[in-house]
Image (cartoon, rainbow, N blue to C red; front, side, top):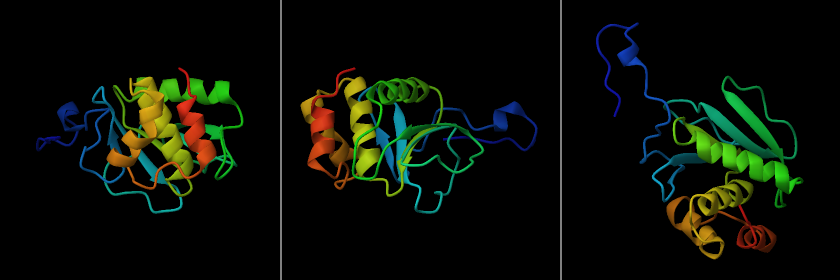
Length: 158
């Protein structure tokens, strides 16, 4: 919980970086305790603080955003076009989630987002064969939409 004093320019009034409300929609708690938000860019931006870092899983460049972000080229219902780039971006997102508000998003917030969240779960210690179930239980039962996406997570190696 963030507390504010009555002085608007007091540094204590600034939200503490890296913290999502664990009860907020789309927030996934990884086994390490790191919090990452998944969402669909096709829906309005949720109320509350904005991300400090975003990883966008799209077949086109993401819209201009006011926070630091990276794009992983990724067709809808498909897989990342560059596995090495995706792994590097997943590692960066996980590392940043220890100190910043990180979000991962595709258009609908299910398939590509669920697949990427599952890969973050693997990087955070969940066995690859259990990662999709972990994300479906703790993020969305509709996460990871295709058999190819499920197979990608099962063979994902950090």
